[in-house]
Length: 522
Figure 1 (cartoon, rainbow, N blue to C red):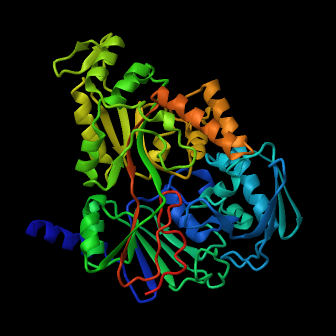
Figure 2 (cartoon, rainbow, N blue to C red):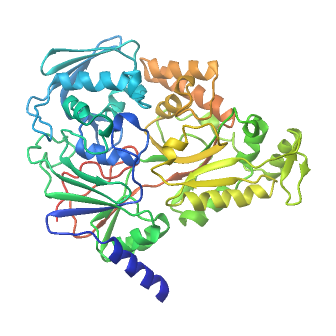
């Protein structure tokens, strides 16, 4: 114990930021390859860009109700294809440029431009045309209805960009800077080390979910990238940092008892840790092999060992409390080692090598698995690896730095990968991951199925809640029946702060509980 405390003390000293009364300090586990929100799915981008950039609407604390932000009001046509947004006329970018409808039109046209390669462009719906009939009105016309448009417009990829900044920085946009209308402004970024933001003094248009419309009460925000669990733990326990969204889950119970820390859980929060299987790879092409891996693991044992119970085992892709969950998918995944062995035998993996690993036609059943080398991902992967060896499967785990993993996942040279995906509804997860138009990223399973696509389309374009639910639930039944993912656990999300920091509340928007921080003070 003395050695652990000594290690924690040294780690805290090494990680300690240069703090002052007017500086807010955050400890963060993951960095991003860049901070151009339109060009990435990587969630470590979202919390930073939400602080620097605003969206047309925000989501209230309930995680499902759109509230005005840059758009002060909107109307929707009866056919669900035309949204007319009335914009605020008192907004400006960090650069001082005045915000108008032209910025909205530019931002969404940039996102839907194939040259941008925006993986989350679908969140903006199938845009037919954007028009600005006057400087503070936007006509947002879709080619087909999108049942979740307003909710999705709150996502970070739909933040409004400044054309001048994008064009001035070119390939360095999101690396050397970004401009936005948010409460914080970009100062500097040292990759894998530190981000520095400053207060946007003109900001006064925060969403109604905050008591303070702006500006924030701190002059500066320093975000330190600290991948090591022990270092983040030590930094927070010693009081060197104000907040973190990445407090080590296995120590949450201790944090709740700490005299210096305050722990707030984000609710509602849907965040699934899963392993996806690339169906076009030889080892993953047989559904029997996929199902065998799905049912051979003991999720409850993994959750307890890795998180000390601060998560719940996941047996479905969609949480039962989420919008449009399909009750019919309960029971598709049943842990059954005996059946897993039978399925592998039926699939022809009957021979074993000297280590007990199954073989077929001289090939070992040893799939390549990509994981992020941070937080609990290695522990989860190792636990599953040990359990699967008992049925003759030998996972070959490759741990990758979080800043390079997104690029590596664009390749086809692996069999499985893992992330924890935050989502707001069944329709969002189905549309994003399983529609064939999303191949090869983020549909890394390379799943192409007409019935799946049609079910997703029905849910996406529905004009009634009943039709939306029907389509989304049918899509769940199909993809779960094919065992395209191994759901492992539904995570909990916490915002851990120093007790000296007041006015904080956890938000569950895309896996980051710190949204804009307008009410925080010390």
